[in-house]
Image 1 (cartoon, helix red, strand yellow):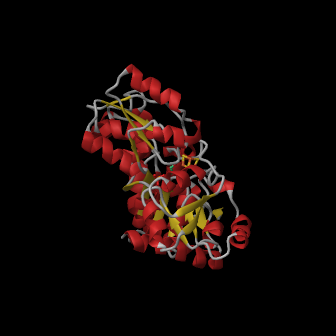
Image 2 (cartoon, rainbow, N blue to C red; image 1 turned 45 degrees about the vertical axis):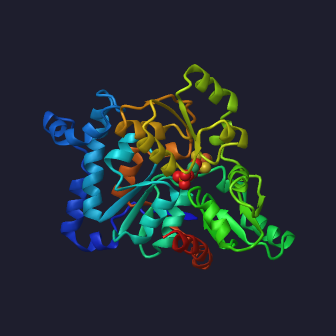
Length: 358
Ligand code: 13P
Ligand code: SF4
């Protein structure tokens, strides 16, 4: 992926003085006056369980400006479940796991997509909406899984395993996707693998996701050795300690966790499936074995559930802040570009997955 920062108004705005003036007005950061506090009160209501009254005067002006800029630029913000609550609940137009966000990127009618997530997600949005402007507020928001494999590695795998289809987790670069047959996410990996109608598949790059899928299917899964730096840190011992402290605690894990952690859990699923489990089962106490902002996002909507938080932050996701989203929409930076040849091949792999799960 390449990214550019133009620091200029988009062409249409430059040609239309009124639009340029409206954008400049929308970008003005208001002071936190009693009037602004009253205007923003309905948004604060959404996050009051997880955002303190001390923090709100800092967030509220940024939220107001971001929402005004979205309107002027006909932009939408796609917010991953790992965003902090003030982003997730107050400026995100569409919220969800990787699959839900990819589907939304394919169908949105906005001119601009701001990806509140990491760069493989922004690239996926660009693949599915090639004519739209896709922005990532911080181009350094990477992913240890995406960095664990290159296009050259995939070409070598093809030589080593001739005729074996290659399924890639979406947590990879467009260049890697371009070398693969189909993508998958944590919510549809088993379905994608089984859709291929073959006895053996390569599932890259997350070794633990591959091992988890292997427990759900008779198809032989050949893994790669990539790991998520956030999920690999959890241990079964810490989860067992939570359960011993209160046997009613439900332990809910993401499939990027190591196998012994998944074994120590009550439920495993994508970030969306984990949220769904909490919202429908309403356990008294829950441990979300994943990035820690997710518990805050669910807590804002399920204040009756007590979350025990083994807090592992994703340093890449945490590069996305309200300030950076605001600057991104104000200055139209950083625009995501994918080489057209790579994009055409990578798009085929992503669309194959989207069509399968639609
Ligand atoms: P989900 O598709 O479950 O949201 O996972 C994305 C991710 O990066 C998890 O670490
Ligand atoms: Fe990548 Fe893990 Fe961060 Fe998800 S949580 S973006 S898999 S490093």
